[in-house]
Amino acid sequence: MKLAPHLHRLGNDIVASYLIDLPEGVTLIDAGLPGHWKDLHSELAAIGRSLSDVRGVILTHGDSDHIGFAERLRQEAGVPVFIHAADEERARTGRKPKTGGERMALAGVVSFFTYALGKGGLRAKYVQEMSVVADGDVLDLPGSPVIVGIPGHSPGSIAVHVPAVDALFVGDALTTRHVLTGELGPQAAPFTDDPAGADASLDRLKNLSASWVLPGHGEAWQGSPAVLVDALRAR
Image (cartoon, rainbow, N blue to C red):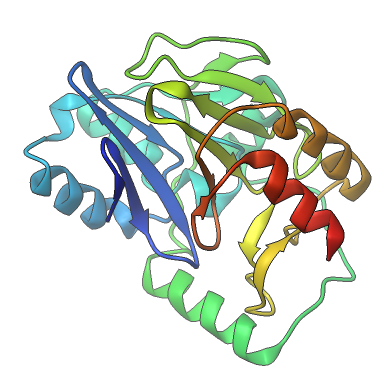
């Protein structure tokens, strides 16, 4: 799905990843669920691209609904996978701390798990080789993505700032659609390891300039990160 020139979404409001298409090639932000592999091929074909044009995939964190097709892309096309060091083990093994006390609504839970199961959510391939990134890194990938450390949802959660497409990719630092309730609008994401840390990390996003803020779950936000963070905190 095209959002703006050079900027595309794979998946939907339940689980999303993103594609940046520039003359020098394609950068992916997150890899959704395993079944989004077909969506990737369809989107690439629609813009006249192929797997050989993909230069790298950056994982905002190591959860299974973000690593999706990353290992398959690495194995079959030799595409490097980038992740923060603090989430490397999470993406390699799937091990993560348990969280509790999540808000839930039956319709939201059913919608999320039905979609995830249909897209191969139980068949995640963990990533076996990754390149480690750190806060402040500027990657040699199309768009020159800038890594912004935002620990909280997980220890190695990052945002990816790409001024070339006027976009900020935030993973699960926040959400505009709660996957367990179906509630819409800016809010904290569930399954967060350290809610206080995640809230503190939002201050790092407020200072960044972008016209698009793109979460892993929920509608794309067309507007500034500062306005989005303020709307979340006002709820």
